[in-house]
Image (cartoon, rainbow, N blue to C red; front, top):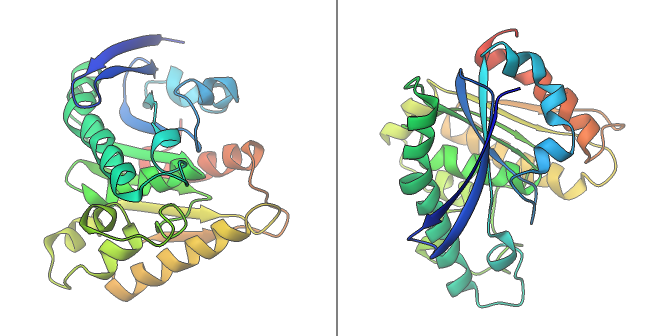
Length: 248
């Protein structure tokens, strides 16, 4: 399988940032790791085998990125004002520094699919709902989509911009993004088994906001045996991907 590794300096974050590319072409997919995870986690947990036919067949090209969660979302004892502004700098690194590189490497000119599991699902949804002019699809599995627990209830304009439940709730009914969302593929999924309780509640909160705003999304609740773990995420992403790129 075609694989490339990159380590490039980010002026916004003032550090080197790493990412990997898997596949030789096709739909560009921005992949976020789970909380505090790394850009190589999808490879380590066997996701390349799970998606091998899509990658080898040129249907998908994965761009697996690093977060700085340990300094932002996960730093629960830190000052939320500072943490969320560092998170915003990371968001701008992705959008203004990494995205042009993705377009250059991918070369297809297609809009992106955003995806991730657990905290990666929050990141994927946050990027998608902030920029439906750049992302035309999202597959978010086992995520929480508000920031109450992340910042201990703290709210300001930067938190608001990074809180899908809050920012969508406050979006005017005639906002042009709502029409854009309804031209996109939005897939949100959660299980109801072990370690999914908080994620189930978080998914239901987002589901309610989307319904209230008339935003069309496929929100899927899987069974009581479906746990918060990689074997189920592998099954789920195989289930949802054909809705974006067809069969491998």
